Length: 76
Image (cartoon, rainbow, N blue to C red; front, side):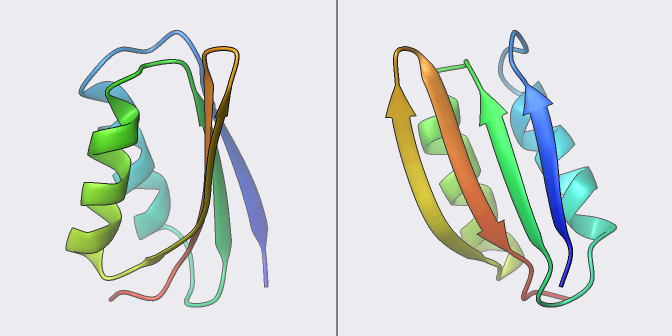
């Protein structure tokens, strides 16, 4: 199992979702991706992306304008 961190702070919609999708494609099943971003629309876009790809959103939190998502790769 690999844990990859992706710092997308300062990027605006749709870039956080697009870069998250690109990073997920490179992961093997069971790997985890931690995404940190500051775009408030990411709380809508990234969970939606995870549903589309068939992956698992294990954790989602926000504090002081920072949004953190932990995704486990499950999809194809």
